[in-house]
Length: 357
Image (cartoon, helix red, strand yellow):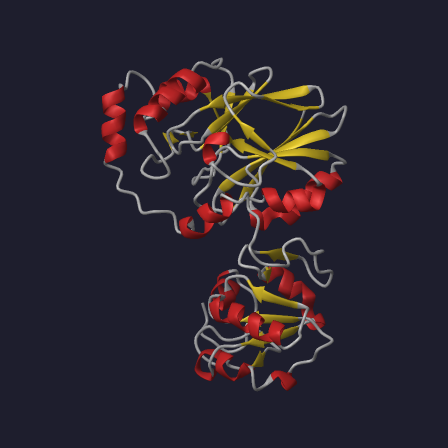
């Protein structure tokens, strides 16, 4: 079987691609909106036909790439019926089966982190994809979206720990760089649910985690209730050809610092900070044109219309606003520098002025 484990560093999300080598039919688990370009490129490079994008649950920390993958590759969307999402092609329940070529994924309902969590088990029980129900040496939280520690305890013990000990478990997230575990390992070493830990111990532990809500929850949950379909135009448009860009759910094309450095003289770099910031500690990118954001609408004629523009500020917020102004003025080849000058400097790219690091 063809298997790839992919990672989104912003949300620490794992995305999984599985395909049958004979028929080249594939499924993609837990895609991320900002990684749709990467994922669709991989599917095409491997010569696969993506049948399904599958969600382990309704995510609160990122927007799913399911809708974008459907636009790009014609794949269908499947997730738990209990999620209550609109736009899915199939609403899954326990014991459903998803075929791809000669292989199958078996659906197990594992509520607890949310009310609509699923675990997908490969037909030979060699692999299972647990979402946020069971993490590596941990579990997902249970304090929002119909979370229930008692339900999670029974889900793990009855639906996941009942798999063969040698079954490999792949979570939706890991924040320490660990990629895989096994049923036997988690039974023995998971500090929340392993060993002889009982239901009351587990529920008491989960009740006292006191975690902050995910930063993206107010954006991610409403978007994921629509299977990741944006409420603005542009997401399904063809990728720009002038640089490798990433389309964000906010409706903005972003360029990574290394890609901007490689683009060189092909683009105009528009710095929208104030003069004091431009010549301040962070310095500025060589060749950048300084037009503070407040002056941009009246200074459009300082920019060329036949060359792409990359907007830059301290961290990426003001430059995103600058793109809206430029779009309204008729500019089309635009991108925001991801992370702004803070990231540019942190990654060691060249600057003019500024303080030495």
